[in-house]
Length: 467
Image 1: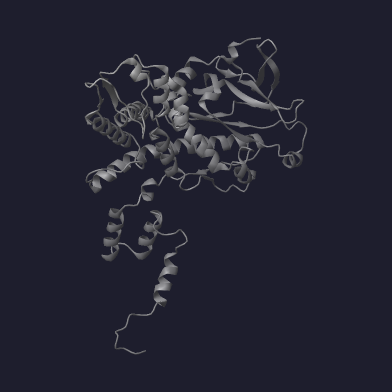
Image 2: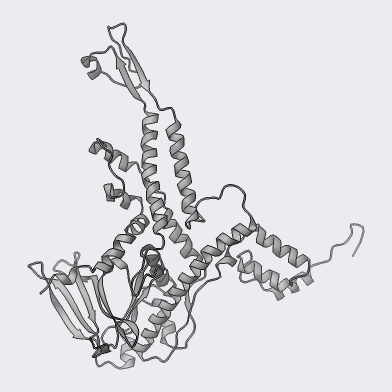
């Protein structure tokens, strides 16, 4: 019996704290409002009612979430696929996690989680086949499958250097399982901790992976619920660490963007608050008694009077300078977010040069290309483990898009292509293929078919010609 099994390791805790702003911003405005003073501080002498009203009127400019969505959109504009291997892997890729997600859907979820936290994980698991034959296992769908793990689900891990290679020797995973109860419409959601341990001694593996499942007992203590030897020679967990900071460690790649997004969240709250007061200016009363003020009613059709001939009512209004300053600050931060990676959300002001556009595009595409390579390596490693578990002799290859620049169409690109084609620097086939790469033409367009169709079109004739 131990409760330390549920404690997060210092490494995991540090990564969670560093990536918390990115993950919270990705979850939207309602989640940010639920966080309250964690991200939106309370002003000195501000009442609880005033703070709650200000919090409720604060909306989120989704800089981090939109950036992650747009960058993932570039990578997955062409679906991630598994190169044909003529094995069971080809079919398993259509339902790679036994939950209906194909490889492309699964890979995007892994990639999005890695962008938010800097790291995410793929675990390859398989149900126990026991004494089943291969045919029986296929009939019962007893085959390896992928499990996506986010940073929040990992409680801790241990590593060791084996044959000069850093190797995962233990991992603790928090998971939730569903169990039936006496009420068929109200199943129980049970938390359990999965502990996978690879025995190592003197830098050498001494056995196969041991699996322990922990669940809480009636005394709220974590106890071993089940334990068995898996027979697996390694822990099949691969890390997609696009923010790599060491083996199984990473930093959130969008942390600087998140800082600006949080500043925008707070500044927008101030802006909404000052706009409210500007639209409903503060009134002041001169020459009225307390009883007069208690009877005061404001609205259309109401009048207010006093026996004091010197009594008067006035308003204190904002000059508007603070409102303009706040709006300028918000716009500045939106463009700062654009510089940090938010290219598709706000338009660029002023003129730009073709060279500058290409440099900016190349910076983002270079970073995305490395991230896409990381995802590709992680998926190929997971598929190789899947093949190893199933006894399939294959070297899986994952095909992933990295031709991001070609997908970014601009008038400068097409103008350059047009000039090269008209000057006969490039052929018709090259011209059409380049237009297809930039999504200007459909993939179904075939250069040879187009040449035949052009040849079949009638020649232009003068108005006076007949036949």
